[in-house]
Amino acid sequence: MSEGGFDPAKYLISIKGKDYLPVAARLLWLRTDHPDACVETEVLRDDESGVLFKAPVTLPSGAKATGHAQESPSAQYPYIET
Image (cartoon, rainbow, N blue to C red):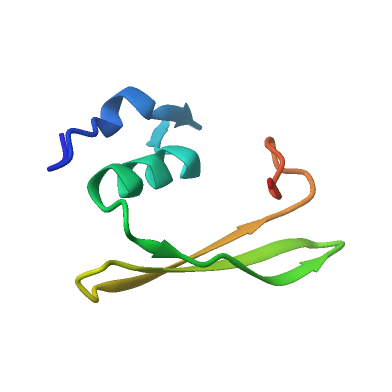
């Protein structure tokens, strides 16, 4: 359990036999522990081969991290959500 009381275990799903925490749950966790965090999502590429995203995250303390994700049009879930 996180410092803000978020329990990621209850959001885990299994993909190909491995535990996976979906992006929506990761964002909920971030917002629970750091409601003032800044997340900026940028599409780096979107073409017939798929889409590539970049998501820098900055906490109020100044801590920073950047995540990347790539999906193909044949992905099980929609890869662009608004």
